[in-house]
Amino acid sequence: MKIDQAIILDHAIQRDLIEQLLATEGDSEDRRHLFKRLKQELKIHADAEERHFYVPLIEIDRTQDDARHGIAEHHEIEELVEQVEEAEFDSSGWLKHAKNLADKVLHHLEEEEQDYFPKANEVLSDEQAEEMGDQYLNAMNDARKQSD
Image (cartoon, rainbow, N blue to C red; front, side, top):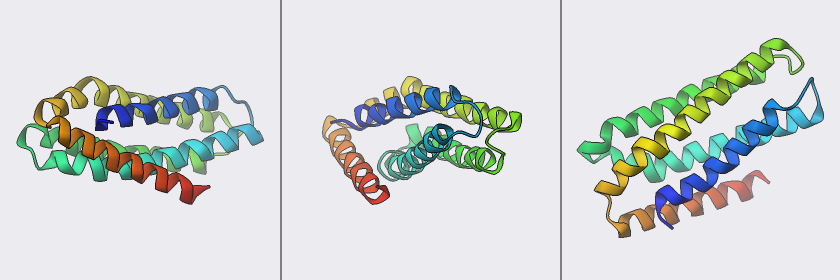
């Protein structure tokens, strides 16, 4: 599977978790569980994506700026995750931070899908994209097994 297709599968998981999380209320077990799952998905996704998508693209002039921007957004997302985590789960502040996180993640996913993936497909051979996709999927599967 090509790298963009592999990443899009995980984007769907993130979108679903965000939607479910924002539909929760108060300091519920459901809210805490969904946040924990989203936090874990975002972390392992960022690690695998940086290693198997962005790092190779940094070496290509045409995609270098996008790759650096994508990595920077991962760091911004990490900071927003911390803000959500530090807020009281039943406070209005928690919901504000959760919505900020959701907005940033959704923006990042759209930017990748609309801008970065088409450019990557122009500069990568099918073989390169397939190899990167396999490496990404293996990294995600390994990380998910370790987090269970």
